[in-house]
Image 1 (tube, rainbow over the protein chains, first blue to last red):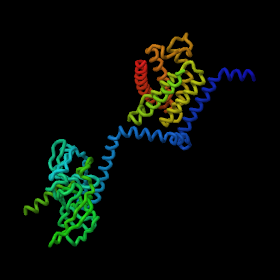
Image 2: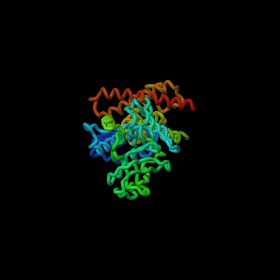
Image 3: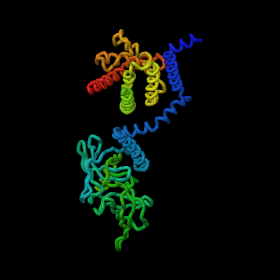
Image 4: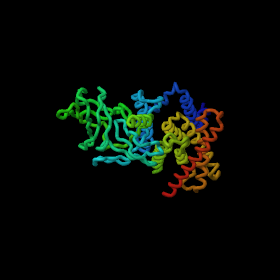
Length: 268
Length: 166
């Protein structure tokens, strides 16, 4: 007995090593058997605050990557949404495509406001394409260079856009009266439309620029000019035009056919 | 006896760096240096072997918690903690008792050799435990080599920094 005790004491380190090494091998074996791994669950529970802190720390550095992922996702969703809303406009069922872009310059204080985007010819941008965000429309491409493009902002008194009431499909002409960067005017809406404050205005789809059903804003006031049969509606925009960053240029697949058709009709 | 606080500080710093910088998932690369191995080197040589073993076990568990690797690093650390005197004899003079070694008094060259040896052995066992078998020998050797290289470079960087700051 004395001998056994002595040998244990002498080889204590070896025994401790065998014990600890065996324990770690057991951890490994347990970890390989996923169903029975309470170790991982425990690990998860213990590390949660640490992981959260680490995520916060790294998301700061990875925000660029995260943003790019979000943009790609948004691009996909917008394409799906526009395509579904415009099934009847699609020739040969070519889906709509959107080109992600960043606003690198914006103006709101002028009467003729313009924006500059960081995409151009090489990205597939062409003149007279629509520019939108997830919240609504932003403007129309006016000129394109190799790497950038100029956009007529919604806040430009020379721009007129075909828009309609979402609930009744009555069309009108949307323009900016330079009163405030948050609101525009929808004119020529027939009195039969029975507009109330709060009605939603969307794009009409009667042009080759914007697909139909893209949100624009809400009616904030109605007015009927004297001796007139049409409303003048004040529309407050969904998209804050003073705070633009990520936008999407809409590629309308049948734009050329539609433009040609319109030209042909006008020439006859 | 200001050795222990210094050691604890090293422990915290190296684990922090391991978790917040040298994590393959965060770096987006398949391998990342396991700089925490330096802790096994910094453990005082005059400590009783059972304390060194328990310390190695504790360091390994902490790293396994960081990487969700369930025991792989623990096993490798315990192995290194136990076999450390062998490496000391191999690299430094074999006439010297391992417990007399004070790494801060050794030349950078022999210290670096010591680090390389420990890293190579430690990493071999880490990746062996990752694979579980020796079927994927090619992968094992590739990962072992790549990761060891990264760790050795990072460790050299840390050693140079600490030497210069003295």
